[in-house]
Each structure stands twice: as structure tokens, then as C-alpha cells.
Length: 256
Length: 352
Image (cartoon, rainbow over all chains, first blue to last red):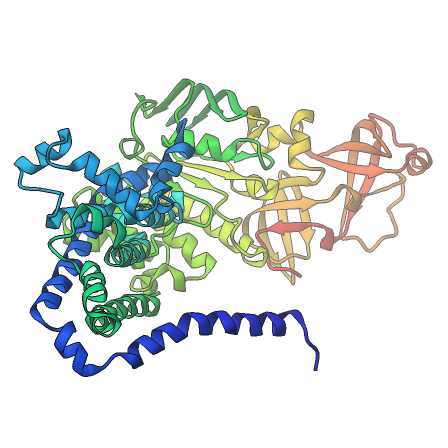
């Protein structure tokens, strides 16, 4: 038997897959269903689940609405400092999450200039639902924007040119040609930034410990009740996340 | 009528300079040049996607230089056609009408009409990804023509097509053009395509228009010959007779082994024109034997190029130094030339 590169790499690769898979299996198998009913589905857990899911949904919607114009601009226009701007957008990927939380708190707390304006409109960051949304949006923004820019870049410019030459305005071309053709990237970007949002904990701990979102509650339970309670609390969120990920991912693969 | 006046466009290191062109109503202008000559940039500037540094673009007397593309009434058929992949063929064709707010009854009627002319009625329900190259070309053309634009601008519309189909599609383009009479600017690097389709040809290189004129004018122009290549390209009318094709060019009847009918290009390579000593009929099987007068003899290392004239038709042939001396070919002399029927390629045609 020849021991070629691919055979060797295949064996190494199998270790990595096992490394990734074993925790998931032991988590699902090792969690007691009785505990799930007790810890994972009590009022506190269901509330935290609702907070986490709705906050990450809102953060994703916010990023879509604000990210589409910015990403289209970045994809279609050349200007001085574009590279710098793109690096700036990617910065949240390398800022430690706790630090990101501190930054957000300093910038947008209700005594700071912008925060005070926001709080007048009922949007309070510190220990408020919107604090969770802001923390999630901050850490997922690079993922959403990266995905959208890739999407817009993937479109043949001639498609937009033809639409324009046939009499469609820039707006109409964007809505009828550009947007539908980048739908796959919009979906992927939304999914990834939703996932990134719901998995965030560091920034949320600092900006908005309350209302307790799922990740905060899991940490809380780990410290006060131990690993068993923590894993039971986490299982429903884990299953919901996996389900959404699978549904979106595979329904899109089929349609292509 | 499209006029381009004194146009200058800068794009990075490349510039289009001093471009002056005019395209008459119903005229088919071919812009020909090598890769990197600035052909696509010129089209995109006329269409309004690139802003010129200087100069004007005038469409039917209206200065459109500052207008956005959607206000210019110029349709675009890009290379590879850029059919909207998320729309059906019907919706692709209907796009320009829908944008203009046409009623759905009108859209249906006009799509039906143009689809019949372009013979794509059976494709209307399909998605572009399922179409062949030729079908895509027709759909792109239908989409461009349905709005009745002031001109259709086509960028290498045949380069994505397999060689074997290209001639057929060239013929189709010519047929549709003569039927509908639209104004066209067609960009290509293929000199035969340019010769066949173009009412006039604009030769462009290094960002400048080198020459513009009818095929017959360009053929005699030494500056243009680098573009058109050494082949003899003549316009004629073909007719089938007893298994051969008779092509009439001016007063001469040529015989070709290629199968064709109607308006054709006759293409003869200079090395396929044989020169014989005058006075005696050559003992050759060639079908085409003609008397010709030598206009010029030029040394083009390593060979002599002689230009000939017979009944108003100019031809070019090559001779070696030895043949030139043996046959005593000199300017002003009358000589006999022969061409095999298989040496007269016709465009479009079926291979013999």
C-alpha cells in the first residue's frame, strides 16, 4: 500500500474532524432530558432564548438595511483609502469581545452624546435589550459586509449595463437585477451574522448583563449550578441554531 | 445618426484619443482592431458607462454626452450577451418595455412580434442557462431591438460562438439587419466578420481611429492592410449552378467550390493566385483563369507582393524572386492568373 500525501493528510484530517465532532456528540448525548425540562425549558431559560433569538434577528435586520448600501458602494466604487476603510470594517473580528463591549458602553451609554440622543428615543444600551442588539451587530458587521461585498462583486457588470441601456434607472437596475442576483450572498451573510450574533457573549456581558440573553444565562447557571445545569440550559438553543442553519443552507443548495 | 466628435477618454494608463466617427441611420458600422485597441472602452463611452474627458456624443442631433445611459436610447449587446439569469427569456426580452411602463398586453404583443422575426418564439418560457450560444445571441438581439433604440451597440457578439456556427450567425445578423434596418455599431477583432457585416469599417489601434471607410476603400489603403490581412476580400453575389457556385464580382464570374447563395464575401489567399506566362493558356485544372494587368510590384521580405487589376477588381498575389524573374512580371504588364475553385472561399457558405 502506498502511503501518499492524500492518504496521510486524510488521516490527519480525520483527527481534526473528530476533534470538532466529539464535543458536539458528548454534549448532546451527555445532557439528561430530565434536566433539559428542568433547566432548559423553565421560564428564565425560555425568556433568555427569546431575548437571544430576537436580538440576533434584529441585529441581522439592522446590518442588512445598513450593510447593503455600504457594501454596494464598496463593491462598485474605487476611491482613495478604500483599503483602509475595508480594514476598519474588519476590525471587530480581531478586537477581543470584552474590549468591544467596553468600547460600545463608552460610546453609546445614555450619558454619552449619541447614547443620550438614543435614550430619548427609548433605546437604552446599558443593561437593556438594545444593548444586546448593539453588541451583536458590532461583532457580526464584518461578516455581513464581507458576504454582501462578495455578492455584489460576483455579478457581471454587463448585466447592470444592459439594464441601464434598456432604460432602467440606477435604482431600478439595483432592485430588479443586482439585488435578486446577490440573493444567495444576502441569505448566507444573514445566516452567518445571525449565528455570530447569537453566539456572542463577551461584549454582551459588559454592555447588557440584563435582560439575560441565553449565553449569559448559560454562564450564570454554570457558575451557580454547575456543568449539568449549564448543558441542559444550552441544549434547546443549540438544537434551534442547528435546525435553522440546516434549513437555510440546504434549501438554498437545492435551488441553485 | 450617431456622431462621436473629438472624443478623448482616459482609463488608467490607456487613452482613447481624437475619436471622430459618425454612423448614419440604418448603417452597420464595424469597429475593428486588435485586443487592447480600446474598442470596448469606445462602446462603453458611447453608451454612457464611462465619462469622456473631452468631446461630444450626439444621437440624432441631441447631445447626450452628459446624459445617463438610460436616457440615451442606445441598446447594448455585450460579449457573452449578459442575459438576466434570474428571468425567463420572455422577461429578458420584455425588460426594456416594462421599464418604460408598457401595458402587459402591449408587452406580450411586441415580444411575440420580435420573437417571430428572430425565430425564438419557442424559447420564451426557458431560462437563459438552458440556451445554446446561438439562441442566446438571438435573445440578446431581441431584447436590444424591442425598444426600437437609436442604435444597437454590440461588443464582439460572435466571439462566444463556436467557430463552426459563427458564419451562420453572421449571416443571420446580416439578414436581420437588412430586414429591420436598425443602426448598428459592432465591435470585433475578426477582419472577415468586419468585411462581411460592415457597411463601413472603422479601424482602431492604440486608442485612435486609424482609418474608416468601406471595405473596397480600405483594401487599397496600405495603412489599413495590416488590419485586413493579406487576403483578397471581394463582395459578390453567389448563385448555384451545376454543382458549383458562380460568384459575380463586377463583370467577372468566378467559380467556387463552396456552397452559397446571395450576397457573399469572396476570400482568396494571395498564395492561391497563380501567375502564368502570358500568351499561352495555362495547362492547369484551375476553373478560374483570367487576364490581369500588373499594377505594382513591391518587395515585402522575403517575398514579392504584386497587385493586379482585372475588370475593375483588384487582387493581390505573392511571388518569389525567382518566379518574378522567370515570368518577367513588371508593372504595367498583362499576365494570366488562375485560381482553383476550392481556393475561393465564400462567406457565408457550406464547406465543400
